[in-house]
Image (cartoon, rainbow, N blue to C red; front, top):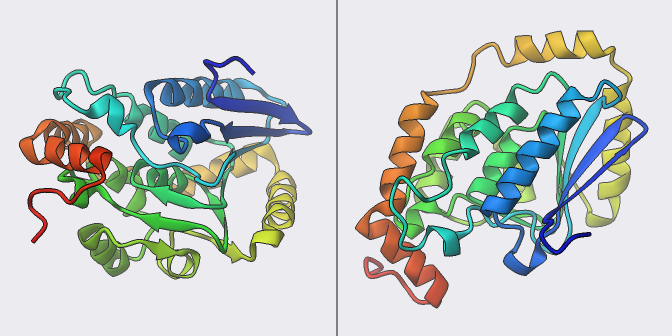
Length: 253
């Protein structure tokens, strides 16, 4: 694979597998990752041979969220995050089923990716967190796809505390559909892909349209402006700096 490629793409027997492959930065949603994901999703949706999309990952971490090294010191207009809503929308509204596979930590925007999926399979090693508030930013954009999926009071507490939680609570809270032992993840994914592929393409697309008929929650224009404002704020830049420097943020008592 080219050193500039951070995403593996394979299409086999009707399954487009999009594998996040940038373990050096914990599969962060860098500009390159977002662009390659969007390109791969568009290609899979346009390919009549593709019946199911699978989001997977290499390395220990599913996705650590936005690449904070790119956000540090940036203003609201040049953070490189404004295309993220388009990616979430493509996945959320995909007429083809999307299956997410998480075998390790998922944070912030990485949780947002999973929330767009129709089925999420998580291994026992998977952990999750809405870490935004601890960085002085707001989980604004991902709220559009997370809130329709999760039990409201569970999402409320976890978004406010930024606590790390495991696959069991993720399943109880609606973020994860199937929480299984680590050594059963692949077999569970294969079984779900087979089950999804058994549906007729047009019927699946229409069923998905019915299931998504409530639409995305909130205006992405407003949500991304809120997100951008907090990324560029004094608190946001301090939180990002503290994260990179591995120290407590100034507001921590």
